[in-house]
Length: 126
Ligand SMILES: [Zn+2]
Image 1 (cartoon, helix red, strand yellow):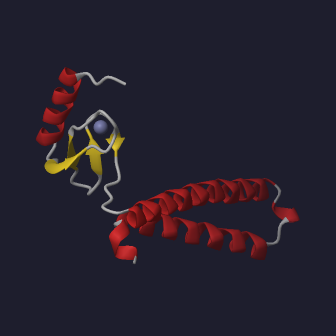
Image 2 (image 1 turned 90 degrees about the vertical axis):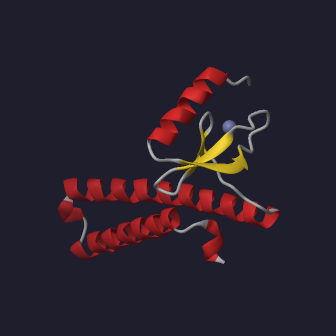
């Protein structure tokens, strides 16, 4: 994949103007090598490839991968629970309140874990 340098430079300028900080690290994508930018939100992005995860060791890389797959699992689980809840709200008599509250609690927990995952950097979960 070739990278449009002019597009990249334009994007970098935009990032800087939006308050992003240029980092000494380079994008890990093969053939990219553009400097990475840290957004005010703490996200690290490449001007071309979007969000990247900086890791300094194999172990850390594994952790990041498992966090991503956990996030995907939670995402799927959340969809399922929302489906169940919307079905239940259409036919409330078939479902007991207790059951619904149980599912709401599950949903609440999923959202809580998702929030924790998105706010804590990988190195702090050790
Ligand atoms: Zn890149």
